[in-house]
Image (tube, rainbow, N blue to C red):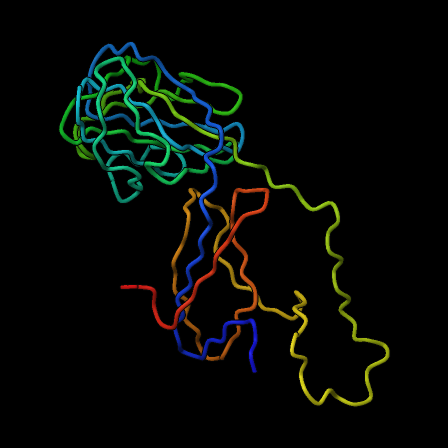
Length: 282
């Protein structure tokens, strides 16, 4: 019998790959600090706070380099404070060469260089922009660490700290990062205006006299008849696709439905692929 569901036998592993087809880049907004640098440093840690749900897509830096320059861009949820010394508490988003335009002229790490970073309303997110080869970035002396540098209706950029090389270098505070962040507004989820009524927990008042001899070829997938297992929907960034494995334990199961987490509020072309065993090496 052919069914539309995946069948996974007990103690077997199945690899799944979900892919969202690339959509057009949304219109980008910009929030910038000053590009009139006063001094130079290797890196800067600072926090932003979202006033609306936003995606960070790219940034401009202020580097003295004219020509190729190696740059790193790190992030973590929440503040950098208390996490200045450990790279394991950060996620490296960008580690590559940019084309430097010289001091006080924006040098771009453009949209598409890393997966967009979701920052929800009233959440803080920390960034670390670093030159791994030494003091190549301009900055402005700050007044108080954590003070507002720039803000608009969508986001706040706060004063942070300057760093020597890496996560072990000396810290200098307060410092104002010189650069720009490019972002788009993320849609705010809205509940459906016509929610599905909850199925009655009671059995039918007129059951059939005899059981059905053969199951239907197209079984009804009522929510109450399905078990559900999910990961977190508190996403911190986005990507075009995800590969992952699942492994059954003591029972055979059928995968009948998959829910995804997308920031789009319109039609999206989704592909679901699968193979027996693990995705690794494939």
